[in-house]
Amino acid sequence: MSYLNGERVRLRAAEKEDITAFLRWINDEEVTENLFFSMPMSRFEEEQWYEAMMQNPASEHVLVIEVKDQSLSQDYRPIGTCQFHNLDWRNRSAEIGILIGEKTFWDQGYGTETMRLLLKHGFEVLNLHRVWLQVIAKNKRGIRAYEKAGFRYEGQYRDAHYQHGQYFDVHLMSVLKNEWQENQKGDLKSASGD
Image (cartoon, rainbow, N blue to C red; front, top):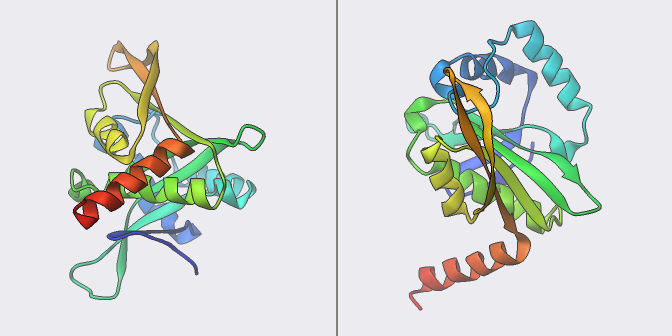
């Protein structure tokens, strides 16, 4: 199996065996608090979703985010998922999504690293020009991670998400290939001490 490797995370193709973890994550109210769906999912529905997802082109398949398990020196532990979707090859654009399902791994930079790894793949391998996402305005953790990865605020859909008896704005964020390349140059200069 091939992987997309970062410093602390690696991304791999989703397998049927991952469905148990997926179900645990998407049926956890804390995990789904900042996602765009709110209904519990059954194993049958998740298996149907998996089969339908596998019919999509490989570039739109869900990837599993893994980190090295500190208790086992060579094994990796799945902590979430990420994916490109709504690929528009004519305009070289794609939407991106991420879910860190293992709450003990929140607020440790894994989301930011995953987004940077996906952007590298999107711009250097898929030859995308623009990568974009939608995020509920109250999701401060997510917005912070996206900004660190290079995303910029583009605008908002006002009162576009209804949850807990109230409406929330949805922010639109994106990063262009040339912006990402400039960030990479800046990161290299910072690393070399220039």
